[in-house]
Image (cartoon, rainbow, N blue to C red):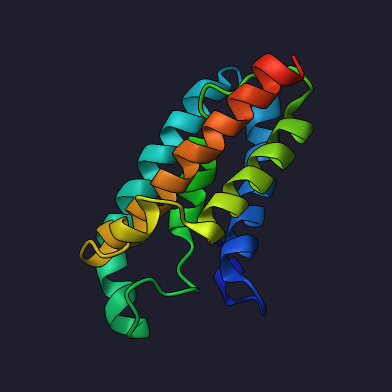
Length: 146
């Protein structure tokens, strides 16, 4: 995502951060933020599966760090149907933090999904982490801090 995966340190964190920066104006000023997020999940997922096979071959690893389209899809799924009751900046920050925690810790079945072939393995572990992150965001923003 815009070369973020090549920054030093944690490429997944950089890719997630780049996605948040890209999404902020789109969600804040778009007429339909839900449509933006659905389009993001679909677009980044399709790109991840299609291009992921080539990334695996080029980088020689099953889930290459510099390839961060999976993080972009994960951030979009994390935010899907999450209420922005405290504004998009706060919601994006919460979603980013929750997604990164689950993407790094990889609770079941995230780690197992990494074993899927090519772009599917790259993508599905992040989407599973995003489901966990989405649930945390839903609880926080709907029940704990409405």
